[in-house]
Length: 171
Image (cartoon, rainbow, N blue to C red):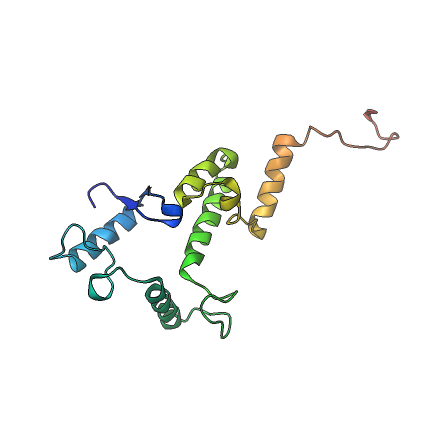
């Protein structure tokens, strides 16, 4: 709680990593901790479940589904948990990755330099694992096209009409 860094242990492939929290998330964790962990021991689960066990994925997904219903958020009809099209907790991870990429493109940052940071943050071993999350959104297509033209538009010569003024023949 002191430094705003989450330490994840025993994750997929038995890895461990540290994740920095945003200021707002850190504030929420402090509030949660002061409300839930008044008498907790240091090795108690941060998100406790039933009988001193950790909260289960099933419990998280059921609560998530209930929160979506209460918020009036569509579930793509009658999709069951885990079915394609059904929002789930993992959807936030995907959205986070896409929003990072989108922000970098709009800020004009070199996405190739930032992708390894996102890869480490998500805990991926390979770039292809991270690339799975990165989808081109229609609202970015024009920005990316313009940026590519500005940066690389002169690499391939334009083909013009020999009758136009200033035409240069290139091979």
